[in-house]
Image (tube, rainbow, N blue to C red; front, side):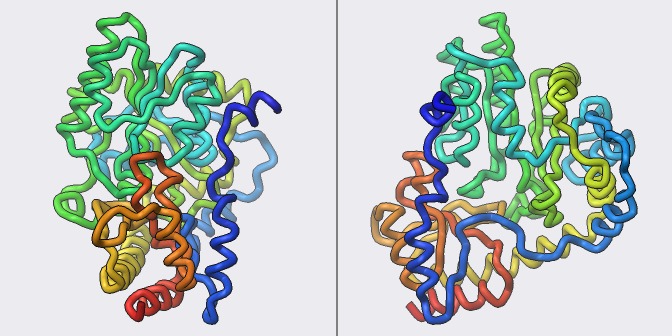
Length: 382
C-alpha cells in the first residue's frame, strides 16, 4: 500500500472540491461540466438486452461470447473502415480505463521500460506506466522520439484526444506505426502501439464528421498487418453505458491472446448480461446517431456562450469536450476554473492533463439540455 501511494499522484478531481462548493453557491445552482459522465438514458434496446440476459448463473467467458466478438468485427467494418478483423483478436474489458491503467503491467513492462503518451493527456496513461514500474514520458511527436530512443516498449495514442479533441489523420498514425516497427527491428525488442479511440463516433469538424475518425487498425495505417497494434474502445460515450463498464480491445491476435491468458488467471471478466447488452448496442447505429445529435446541440450552445464571454475554443474537432482558454493571452487554468465557478459553472483545469495544458480548461458536454442552456445563458450574460 505504501509503495502504491508513494508511486502515484493524488487523484486530480479531489482537488476540485473547494471550487465545486463555490459553483454550488450560485443562486441557480451548479452546472457541473468537470467530468465526462453521461447523463442521458441508456437506450431501451440495450436495457432490454441486459434484462433478457439477466438469468446468468454460470461464469461468463473471459474472451467474450462469439456473438459479441463478431459484433465488434462487424462494427469495425461498418463504422471504422477496418474490414476483415479476426474475431479471436477481440477481447471485452471491464471499461476502457482499467485496460489503460493495466496494459503496461499486462504486457510485462517494468523498470527500464518507457511508455510514451500524449503531452496533453488523460492522466491514466501516466498512472498505468507507474503501476508497472515503467517510466511515463509525455511527448508531442512519438514518431520522432521512437527514432531516438531504444527503451520505448509502449506508445499510447489517443484520437480523438481527451481533453483537447485533437484527431490524428492516417498519415500521422502511419508515421507512429512505422517508427515503432523500425524501433523494434533496430532493438530486437517489441514495441506496442495502443490507440485509445473511445470518442471516435463523436466527430464534429471536417473532414472527420463526414469521413470518420481513422483507427490505428485502418488498413491504410497498418499496411494489412496488425502486428504490434491494439485499438481500445468503450461504449460509455456513444451508448450511455458508463455504468455497464462495457469496452473492448482488438488488433494483434498474439497480443490479445496474451492479454486473454493473463485475464483468465486474474478473473477479469465482463459479466454475461453486459456482454449481451454490448452485442446489441454495437449492432444498433440509430441510438448512437441520436446521442451524437444531443451532444452536437449542447456543444453548439456551450461554444456560443463561451465565445460570447471572451473565451477561445481550440482544437475540439471531435470528442466530448471543448478545450478552452481566455482570449488575450495566457492565464493559469486554475484561475479560469475559479472565474467560471463564480458563475456556477464547474470545469476541469488543464493542469490535470500535463504541463503542456496549463493554459486551458476542459468543458464537458455531459449535462442535460436544461443545465447546458443555463450555463450558456450565464456565460453570455457575463
